[in-house]
Length: 229
Image (cartoon, rainbow, N blue to C red; front, top):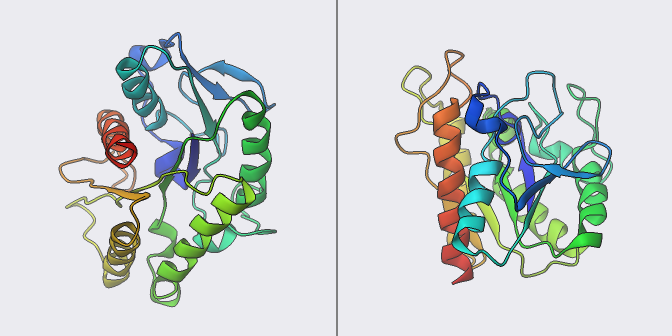
């Protein structure tokens, strides 16, 4: 499973003891392209990477089917707009190429298994007037491109809703992003949308806290299973 998007996918949750406990059938592809036990932090986009939603997502699936092992491919880039998720795109904050890096890492991972799905949490960096109106078309293009370039045309694509934090009310552009994500999900049986209702943030009013990220991961698992079933 590809873990793509920006900082709330990479995870900024504070690491606790349970986040350091490995599940025997859940692995993550490290920066060097090797499989390691999936413990926090899995991402390496920025030094502040912490707990994300990937582990709880994978554990939920693994606990539901004892015959499978799960590999997670961390590729999120904190602060990245969707425009950097295209061929040749560059993100200055992480000094990386989000889309190109994701494709490269996914192809390494596919040597050992089948790409079963793509998890996406992104949109905060596009929540401004000059970017929001183009978001739906860009997201539709991204989904098609991922599936084509990774030869995974039927891979479910799961979209996580932006955080709804009372301390930081949505602007109009954030509402446009939300509507676009919901519409894309509603138009395809293979695209799911995960609500962020009731989840809470860290003191920065930007990132989900650790417990909310664990819950969000389980919600991603539920959405994925609903599509598959």
